[in-house]
Length: 127
Image (cartoon, rainbow, N blue to C red; front, side, top):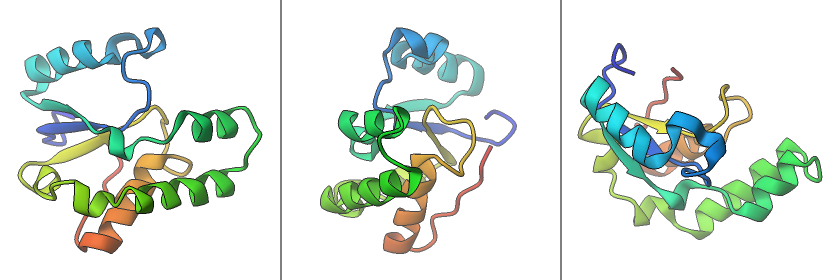
């Protein structure tokens, strides 16, 4: 993140304080970001999936395409393009954090694609 010049990390995970998160728990991550990267930490639950949605996908009760469709419907219903301040993504280089390593099956990619359609000009670079 330091090499990429990230100054704001926007956490879009449903579980940001779980024991499974290790050093990426909310409070620890905020400290490390400031100390190591001079970056700020923000948690944005509007961009997280629901528990039911995530569980259905992770436990194999729903396919990726079903999860993707339901998640996009959720963020449309939440009207995130109106609820969020666009400057969060524009004032400084920002990154989204979730728990998936790759963007192909990750809701952070879906969020960025959605915001790009709604706001035009949101550019995703996968770190």
